[in-house]
Amino acid sequence: MLNRINEILKDRLGLHLLEYEIPEHANTVKYSLGGMTASSFSILVISGIILAQFYVPDPERANQSIHYLSDQVFLGWYLRGIHFWAAEVLTVTMALHMIRVFFTASYKNPREVNWWVGIALFFMMINLLFTGTVIKWDQEAYEALAHFLWVVKKFGILGAPLTEDFAQGVPLLSRIYMAHISLLPLITVLILGLHLYFVKYHKLSPLPEKPDGGGKQIKFTQHMAYLRRSGAGVFTLICLLALFISPPLGEKPVLGMEVTKPPWQFVWIYALENLWVPSLIVAPFLIGIGLFLVPILDRGKEIHWKNRPVAMAVLGFTVFLFGALIIWGKVTTMTHSM
Amino acid sequence: MKQSRTRFIFVVCSWFLLGVYPAMAHVGHDEPAPVSSTSDHMDHKMEGDHDDHSMEEMVQPEAENIYAIGGEGTDDFDSLSDPISGDDIFASDSAVPEIAMPSSSPKSHEASGASDEHAGHKMPEIELAEHEFNSTSKKGFGVAMGITLLAGLAFGLLVSKKPGE
Picture 1 (cartoon, rainbow over the protein chains, first blue to last red):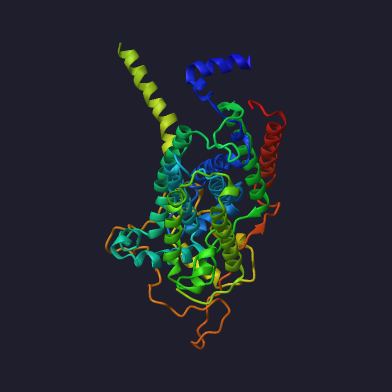
Picture 2: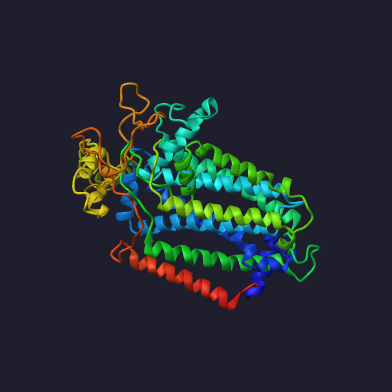
């Protein structure tokens, strides 16, 4: 019976086109981190659509609407928790995915463009994370936005569209909300589509131990089944976290105060800012340039990590540096002000 | 002919009187609630006891009519009738809801609890938001637990059976 249904669907939906062959190592955790990131993103979109029904994008009532959702709406706290923890899981899986791609030299010829598309996707996720932090409009959100405006104003006319003066009479919070729920997700989905297209076009990168390819092949539908399993695991983890641990939510901000630290994803820049305030601008710029230059600077044919000591040293140093800055940012006290 | 026309008119009038009119009779019998600033209410709350950690208590008075412009006493029908602020933000005379952003020049901010150079000026206390463990008394906790268990069961099934792999 099930087979018959399967056949009917295949004939009508063209599902047989998904039965092309891919390397067997696609069905490993290492090579499914991108898929897990996409699963988390899907959960974010679905939970975000429901959350948007309860949010009031007005500075006077934004924070209150989230408190109302969390305290009064049936399962509202759970829904918000799912959204928050999906973002946390996405950050982790995305970082691991980038590390894996670098480790296995999957950015090398002919996949350089897909690396750059991936970097664009990374920055879109950062933007979504930032705008999502701001729209809850508590003290942490306000200070995040204040830092952002400080940076943007340094760019003069280039940064003008992102300031409150660009559209006077329209609260900046409303514009950030618009970006978070429509503009940024739309661009992200388009870039994600391009990213997946290039993965399909260039095929999955080979294992470093077998640079010429070869090895056992499986059907792509089998990989989809694996992704379905890993996606279910990701969803279960997010539900568990949402069930037991609530995301932080403060009260309406006190304007002009600077007392909070950013979320852990941004606290490394807080630590740098403590040393030198302009690092707010310099650090992201340097990171972007560095990531862009990776496939240009490393054009050797070697893909095994043992034969790439410099690349491995750079990777190790970067991971260590970010980890240390995050820990330092979490424990240090503020020694400056905006 | 005349008799059937009369019957027709009688039927139409009966329908109008028995069906439509009772439905229309419920329109407009509630006055809209008076406008009050929810931000003032929240500010008043913030000046109170900050040791009380329960955000639920701070929100509760507003919970019934989160979308209403007015305060107490509005029913659900009226609270949803005007879900946006009554202020026309594009009108030149109305108060524009602006976010007062700090200027880019450095200010002498001090963290909560530090000493203040302006004698007698009370620094507002800001309670930093932290992660908390969810209480089982949260609305729908049982259902949430059920959803989580179902998700776990589905994952377990996929791990054990590996369908399609």
